[in-house]
Each structure stands twice: as structure tokens, then as C-alpha cells.
Length: 581
Image (cartoon, rainbow, N blue to C red; front, side):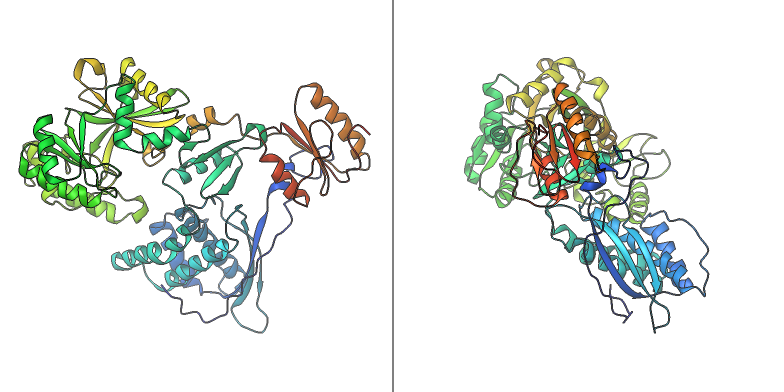
């Protein structure tokens, strides 16, 4: 996706001053205290301005394809500045989308500060934009995002929206535009949904590095990596990620766990299947996403084939042969000692309507998904041998007409690889089943965990129908589906106190030091650990000088909000001596 525009694009970067207060009071009324922690990277871009027809084409791409809502406004053709402002604003919106798809937490479009006509050249302009700084990331990510968005927008200005160009755009966006952004920072599927919900609640987020984030400031802060909590046990995390070790610990604790044997050769797998009794499940011992998992194996030929596939995938060459229990996987998402939600994990399916054949239903759903951006599509595929086998278990075939409302499975089981359909069952979980899920999470020391229960009916106690705890999942996918996303605000309400902000009060009048001393004494009397700082001096909660290896007001503030023993911060213009002087 290259641009035919030959105009030079000069991009420079630097900080701009924080925005002034917008109704947020401080002791002097001059600053929004929170803005003292904010920093922007400025891009100054010199570019050619598309004609009105091109901008209209781009608007259609944004609205119909990328699902970006833009404010409709007339574009006066002669005014280059008006067209430039409209075009730059749209590029900024696309850049923000690309950043989010690249798993970078930018949820507001970069601000377009000014657009000026270029001197000496017709239909050119210089635009200045401000991107938020994300700590501990390479500083050029705004440039990468903007240049990627500009290439797309130039292309969209020159191409109509149709089936062919839509697919070409999606391929290019994923391979050439989003991929470079995803290499900037590691991040899982839970990171952006959680951070987006935090942003909507006004919770400040700080990137700590390697895709881990702090939500909130000081003593109110919590830390997360995907859905991993700062209170999850490192030992428990290690134990949970080995299926064999995890099952052994569950059994040791008296919890219902899989019965399996670990093998490394085909002959051992066949012998294990005979010993356990058919049907069995075969899977790699160290994989996830459902990779290499085979179920309903009822003879030696199927076990041998499944072992070969699992052995090929297993990095440690160890394969699990497991006694199969009846039922369906139910994911119980537990957090802070309680059930947040539960879903029945059904395989990828289509829903019968009593009129169309299964093949027609699949074709219709494939067409509907094809019209969506790839990042919003399901994992549904055309009917293949696996789909035919799954249908046959239900007495159906591609030509069958399923009754209205009946789910027609296209896979035997749900998996991350093949997708699936979640059914909310939180209100049906039997207390005894919830109890073993909570015990399992506690056993592994996990504040947040996905407990997979294999059961025929989650409303029946596990000890009555032979249900088992199949897996204890560290970092369960959070926000990947509609049901899960709906519970993120509830999770954050319990995870972070309020909006996670501690008081930051600014004193910069002539009498600032006297006011700060009085406020410091008041906060100490209330039992709050209050720190005081200026741009070059910081005092701890006892009023003693705190030596920090950073300079500047923002850097000192950032150092303080990363500390768990800070309940409040007072900022003064000049800090001489201690608060007790």
C-alpha cells in the first residue's frame, strides 16, 4: 500500500507543555494537577492536500470499512486549510485505530493543534499533531503509526470501496501497517480491552515495560499484565502452566482432576489408552489454544494418529493420554475470591432457522464475516471434514435443514484455534462447583484465574456427575468476547479503588510554602502518607529529603506515583528546606 504522493513528509518530535486546567481546581486554580504527569510527542508533518473527491472517498472508507465515525462537515473546495484540517484529522483517527490494533493503549485520537498552508507550493500544508507518550516504549511509535495511517489514507483517497479493494486493504493493513506496531511491545488479547475500560473509568495507566501496566497512582495503584494480577503467585503461575504438574497438585489437594498418563512414544500411547479405557483424549503437554488436542479416540488407529500430531506440536516431546469424561468445558472466571462470570464453551456453530440448509447457513455467515474487518471476524471456516464429522455426531449433514434455534456444530470442541460460541451460565453454577473453582484458584495462589470445568451440567454438583477441573489457567483471555467484555467494569470496580487516583495538589503562589506546610500537617493528622516535591527537591512523608535519581517535576512526580507508600502529593514551585522549617 504505497502512496503516489511525492511531497516530502518531515516529522519531528518533542514534548509540549501540558494543557491548562479545564475546570479542575487546585489551591491556586492554575493547573489541572493530573496534567503534570501527562506528556505529548509532537509530529510536524508537511504533506500534500487531497482534492475534495479524495477526502470524500476516504470518509467512506472510514465509515463503511474501518467503522470509524467521523463528523460530517462541508469541505469548501478552494480553502486548502479546510481540506488539510479535515484530511489530517482523519489520518489521526486512522493512526489511533492502528495503534489500538497494534495493542498500544491510545484511545483518543491524537490532537491536531494547527494546520497552515505551505509556503511557495500549491495545495500543501504543515500540520502539527500531539500523540500521548507511553512510558518505556520506543519514542518513534507515533511516527510509525502516523506514516502507516497516511499511506492508507492516500490509498483510500484514490480507490473506491468494493469487495476487491476492501480485501486488499485488510491484507495490507494487517501485514504492512499493524505488524510493525505489534513488534514494539508484547501484549496479549486481554491487554487492550482492560486498559480501554480503565480509560473509560478515568483510571490513569502507566506502561511499566514488557506489556505490563500500572493502573492508578501510589497507594491506590494495581498492576496487570494481560489478565495477570500483581497478586498472582509466581510459584502458582509456574505450576499452573504445566498440565501434568497442575493435575497432580489438584489431585493432591483432593480436587477432581484429569486421570492421565504421560508418554513419549507411540507404543506407550497405545498402552496408556488401553490402561485408561476408551474413549481417551490425546494432547501435547505444553501447548495451548487447543493445538493438537484430539477427543473421542476409541481405537488404536485414532490414538496413534493423534499421538503423532501431538508429538509434533509438543516442544518438550511429552504427550498426555487422558481418560475422557463426558461433558462440555465450562470456563469459570474467578477474581479476588469470587465468580465474575461463567460461560459454557460451545464449538463454532451456526444456528438453524428451519428454512435453509446447514451449507447455506455457513455460506451466509461466511459472507457476513467477510464484510467485517479481520480483527472483528469469528474463526468460522467453510465446511470441511472436521465440520462434517462434528455434524454427523448430531445426525446432521451439510444438506440438512436444522430446526429454528438449534446450534449446528462445525467442530467437536471449542478452542482458541477453531473459535467457538460462549453461552452465559453464571446464574446456573452450582455452589459446590463454584467452591472447587475458588479452591483451585486459591491452591495455585492466583487472584485472577480461568478454571475450566468439564461437566455435563454445571448446575449439578461435580461429585454427582463426575465433573473434573480440567485446567487452571493463568492469564485467561479477558475481554475477547461480548460476555467477557461486559464484566470488565465490574472487575475494575473491585480491582482498583475508585478511579485509582491519589490527591495531587499544586501550590505555586507567593505563599505556596506556608500553604503546603499547613496542608502537609493536615494530611499527616489524617494518617495519610503525604510527599512534597518541586522540580528539584522532594520530601518524604516524614518531611525528610528524599533523594531521587531523576530531575524535573514530571520525572519526580512519576517516581512518586510508582511508589505504593504514597497517599498524596503536594507540588510547590520552590521547595527550600523541609515542611517543618
